[in-house]
Image (cartoon, rainbow, N blue to C red; front, side, top):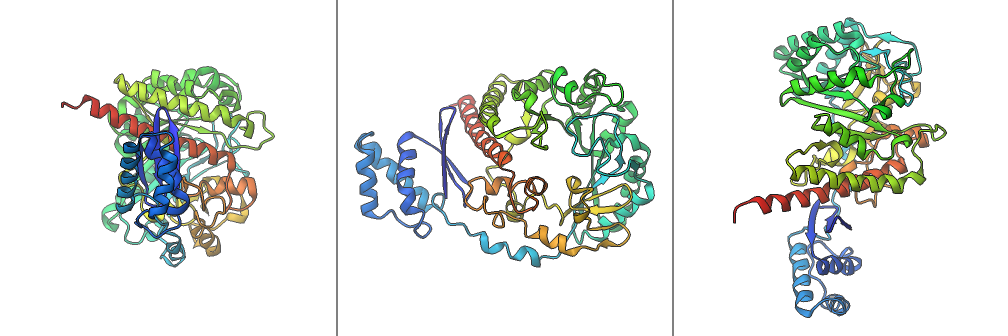
Length: 472
């Protein structure tokens, strides 16, 4: 399968199955498209049939000089011979092996606090309540969760634990206790914990920042962008006052103190700020260099929900952001944007390319009282309650369902060029919009495809920039 597109002056050809990406000139671009109907059906690395090559040449000569056409067709054949063009999808037969694999849990999302001090209007967790009661996780429950992770991680050494909420800092004492306990178990069990924290920043102070800089491999800082954008959707709970004025100075200090350690500022854009490129630029102007901006996923009836008719503006905004990204890199004041960071040299392993985040199998969420769910977005949906930290996984049928949730189980993914980059999208979004995990959230798909196209174009532009600066 071939995907071709033009973006910011670049002609880009993607060979989906092999993951090869080629920046080509106009004549090669057109040649690839002309040959696709035939070459896509032939065996891998097959020579271009003489009659097919001639028919393509006749069409191309109407636009391009004979020599350019001959060189272009030779270049296409070289790419075919190198198995970088018109390659076959070899992964579908690999899928059934997933269910046979021994289940290894490698990550937990600990809902350390089902409570929050902000009143975010779009919060899927209902201001931290998750369709249930407010609660803080006890040390005893958290300890059992870490013991469960160790016991079910097999030979895997590196384990991940994210302290999540609500707002985790509302239960800070237990966060510290669990980090201390996790560290105490590492040598005994030959494990290493990678702790992360997601926070709205309201309770940040110097002691918390210092502890996080010692113990947290990554910290996610929630902020939606410009003051008016943030405060419209993320007011202080109860008073409705500005959270921006409280948290931005803390986030600036915290980000600076990370000193090379991972962090990122994570925003959410809604129908109220479809010009979200301005919010990303605002992050950069505040001094943040690691950031993400995610589309809100909500009930379509909500006034802030993103709708299908918003897509043209959103896709144009991603193009605008990509150009700004390149511009600032060239000016020496660049930043990293999560969705533009794609590894084109190696990429993720086959299992991740096919099945995504591993929710319900390798990754689980733990409620304050110890229930296990496939991920944080399923918490409160009792039909996806998998077990608890005392008994372990009881509903193995749910785990098996998630094992086979992959790009070949989703009809819309099978012929999508982005399937090995997004790995089928979010199972929770599929469930929320279609009532099953093997469907797709169509609006999200369109945005993801555009982000991937922009990311590849950016890579081409930055490669050109590097070549321009290298000495001859």
